Length: 161
Image (cartoon, rainbow, N blue to C red; front, side, top):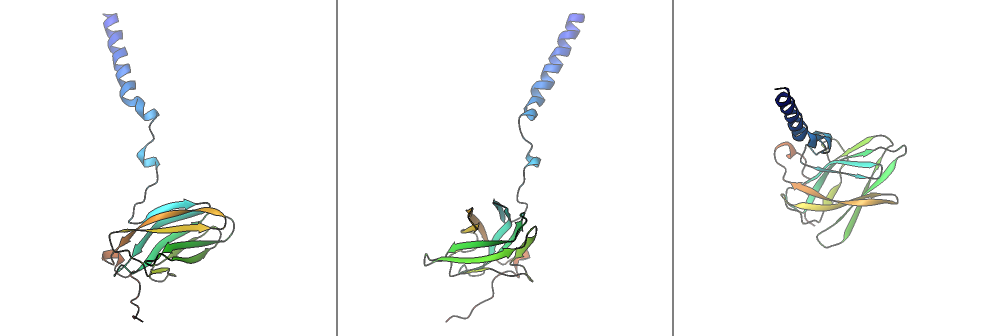
């Protein structure tokens, strides 16, 4: 009788370890960061790019919505580079103070407008982010139509030359 009770206890212990043991070697999904938004994020050296996306009404000009976080103790000039529809590289930049966040593209924020591009809503568009001599990163940004919460973020219409 005691042998049967001991065997049952051992079986229960083995089942408990066998069914929960994988959590000792598998990381939890909640421990990883994810983008809980429409944009994407990346890290380039001391700079963190958060929730980057483009908003366009016509696919030829797009407003870059982005938050740039500077985790360093010094100000950084962040370069934004893209290729227009004529395959020419276009450069723009933004200065981000030490230990601060710079938001671009919002209603009352500075803007970087990508012009002369071929990026219809629903596509992904490559933008290269870099600063100083730090290796940069190419990000494939989602391109959204100015609908819903993004209705006021399309770039201003420009007159044809």
